[in-house]
Every structure is written in structure tokens, then in C-alpha cells.
Length: 511
Image (cartoon, rainbow, N blue to C red; front, side, top):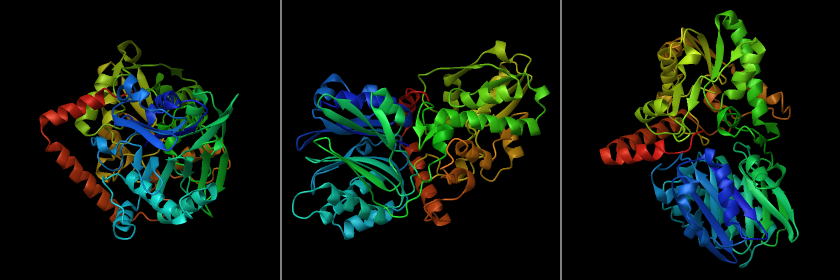
């Protein structure tokens, strides 16, 4: 999962992009980058780390221009520690293009082969985002008549890109001397929207992964970019849009509503916060059916994402709601961290249980989801150590039983606690006295209640249905083998490298 921005303004955009990336920091903490354009020349700075650490005053001064793109990276394909794979990526031919990508391609290997043998393009990294950039550059070259571009030519290139590329992708790109392009895959899996700010010198446009970035920067949200649609803002501030994938359908990733997106964002017409409240309502009904509410003394969220669901659950069941865990905001998202040992250690550094809220009570803990189970087991034990009498656990999302191949870092079945286990076996594994999961249909209905236009979701990690239709068991076996090989290689780098990796991850922003 990553965060992307693209802007065309009437004044320098370096500070605007920096501030926007801060608002999207929750979408990626591994690396950050900005590329700006001053006429036909690009300036770029990117590195591993948080936005506040990557950019210094000297870096900002080196990013002139009134248009540009930005990216925060949470790696799903390629190497988590390879600084060369920080984005944006850049190619200088045929026109000079920078690109920032959120998502994951499912036919990246095939495209690499095509790039080498047919298109005569060389890919320097293992990142599928560099592959996507080269496909775009190649299609721009094929669509262009002569040595110049216009919006229609750019949209024709995107049409051809959609025909070749499979998977999830929301992108911003800048073409040197022409303007900023934004486009979304034909399934609308990853989010993308745009807004406008009226100035005395004319309108300014901003494209972003989430609406919160628009509002935080003073832009008025206009709308989400439709599945298969491309928008192009030229350097004079003229806006163009075109549907570039006939038959495109909207299938947003439901995990955005469950966990990834900020609660103050609106994605595809649905408030993330309201969706989480709804999830709490449906979860309350299941708790009412399966666990006698009279046995519960207090409801507590696992900070921060689960708060709306926990609050609504407590309200529906007329139970006390308390904050029993205090969060250290200087420890990274344990979901993103590599390696079980790093995650397990970081949970204790990240959360502290207040004994006064637990002692002698039957506690219902509510979390947004259970992925690997490491965090859940540690939290249940912390509650017991703090004096809880009984510890019940409820998940606002269903069991995560399948890999995700569209941009969420949980690709191996062996890492998923729910893969091949019953709910009772999971309960025993995390050490809870009772475990209640949200139903898949209730989770989906939580979002549909607020957005009836959303008929189908990308929910493969819950239901095993891969919306692009090209994910086979053999494909899953290949990506798991590649991930395991990468993990083995990381473990062979020695204790010093491992210590540095753990240090960098533990100092990432909290979720």
C-alpha cells in the first residue's frame, strides 16, 4: 500500500507535495519521494525513511517548479530495504516521464519479458512500478505522431496500457513540458480522487490517494477518478478527463475501509469513519447472538483503527466503553513490520495496558482485523497480565484466510493465522476466552449501507475471489516462494543488518 500525489499549481509545489505526503504518511513508511518539473527539466529527491526524515531544507530548495508528483512507499513487491526502489521512478525517453504507483501488478514478470524482447526497454529494479512506468513510456511513444503530445494522444496511450497491464494500480505521472496525468485500473481497486483550488491566477489541481490530502491542503474535493479513467492537467492548468477502459467496473478494496485509509477520508463516496461505525453495529449483533452480553463488563478498542467499531458496538449492547491501552506513537505499524520476532517485540513497546481498567473485569477487546495473530496473542496476554478476569476478542473484519496480491503485504498463506484453521483453533492460538469474527457479508453490507452504488468489492483476502481473474494457485505458489527466498536472504545478512532494519522499522510512525 502506498500514497500518491500529483499537482499542477500557480506557484512552487515543493511545500505542497511535502505537506500532502505527511497527510498520507499512514499509507507508507518505508520511503518517500518528490519529483517536480520546472519547464522541461525534472528535479527529484527520494530516499528510505519517513517524510520528515527524507526531506531537509536543502532538498526542498532543489525541487523547483509549479507541478510535480509525490509518493510514500509501503513495499509489497521488490525489496523493503532497497533505496533504489523508492519512488517516483523516471525515464528520459521518449518524452521524459516520472511516475508514482499505488498497487501491485499481477503480470509484472510477463511485462518485463515484453519490455526486454519486444520494446527494447531495460528494467533496473525488481519493482513492478518501474515496469508500469516503462509500459506507459512505450505506449506514449507508439501513440505520438511526431515529437509532440496532446491530451488525446496521452489518453490513447493509457487505453493501450490498460490492455497490457493486469492487477491493481492507481498512478500519478508527469510528462516533461506537458503536465500531470492520473489514472486508475479498470477494476477501481486502489483509490484515487482529485480536487481543485481557485486562485487569483486560475485553478490549481491536486490528485491524491485519499480525500484527506485534498482537504488538508485547502483543495475542494471534486470526485473520485472512475475505474479505467484518466485525467490530465496540462501545465497551463487546463483539465481533461477520459474513460480509457470500456467495460470498467468499480470494485474497491474493502481493506481500505477496514484498516488502511484514514477515518476522515471519503473513498468512492463512502465515509471511512461511518463504514467503521457500521461494522461495529453488525459486529454487535453477532456478539449478541453468540456471547451473552451480561458476561461483558467493558468494551475496549485496540488503538487506533478499531475505535469507531468498538464505540458503536458498546453503544448497541449498552456496555461501558473504556480506553484500556495507551499507545506509544513512535513505534511503527506492526502490520507492516517484517518478521514475526520484530512484530512481537514491538507490540509491547507500542501498547501499555492500564491495570486499573482491567483488574477483575471481563473484557471484550475489539480490533479491526486479525492477520498474522502475533499482535492479538500479545494483546490478550497483556490484558491478562493487567488483571483481566476473562478476555474476549472480537474482530470487525472476517478471518483473513487468503493472500492479497493487489497491494497489501500479506502474500503468504503460512503467515495468516486463519489459513487452514477453524475459529476455535484461532481462539486457542491467541489465548482468548471467546473469539467472534465479523461475517463477510456483514462487512460488505456495512459499506453498501452507506454507498448503495458499491455492488462488488475486492475482498480476496477474506473470500478468496481475485477480481482480475488471472490469479491461479500456481501464481500464489510462485509469489510465496519468492517471498520466502527474500526472507531467507534477509536472515543471512547478519545481526548488524537485522538490528538496523529493526531500528528503522520501530521508529516509523504509528498507524
